[in-house]
Length: 289
Image (cartoon, rainbow, N blue to C red; front, side):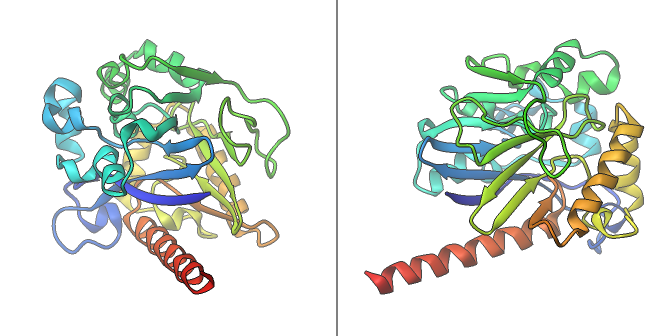
């Protein structure tokens, strides 16, 4: 199993370090951290970020409020489709897409992979189809997923994962990939856990937004704290799940590495680690050959 870390979106809201904690100019820099997993069942994409149609015709696909509020940068190089092709694969090689949730910055690339089966929590698709209120209408964009032909919906069941509810044995996927319900940001929000030879990875989606939220004191920038408040549907559940993730992250008895969807520093660290590991594996393979 080989894992590629992809940045499938660039958002630059006004606020600089008040959002991301590091930018020195007026604009912040947020990413859309997705994963591409090479498996025996074909390629598996974890979230999609923005898609090609979002780039070509943003105002027919996305909420103008979120386009401007988030400072979305529309560039083909950020699409999963473009990056997968640059890795030497075809869109048809993507057999499965597993979603943390259906927000516009996570599901925009679904129609770039029409042959893929899309896996999501049952509660999430039901909430997305309802779309009640200004935020819900802006965050859930049916234009991004109304052409999907193959859906698989799930509810929590089976053996827990480090104390969290879990969905195991996703249809057609290897047993190393699990859905971990983490409601709060949306009602059907979930993390995706991947069992790798180096230990567990947990893509926590939007369960948190800022790397230092997983520190012992759980600090967050003012901009991202306010954004989370604006987007949450259940504050109690969101904060409870953040506490649980923080405890999991700090427990050295469990070999679990966490990351969220939008922190650029986290993305850079994981992407560099992945590239280094792949280069070392290639070097060892060449020497043994």
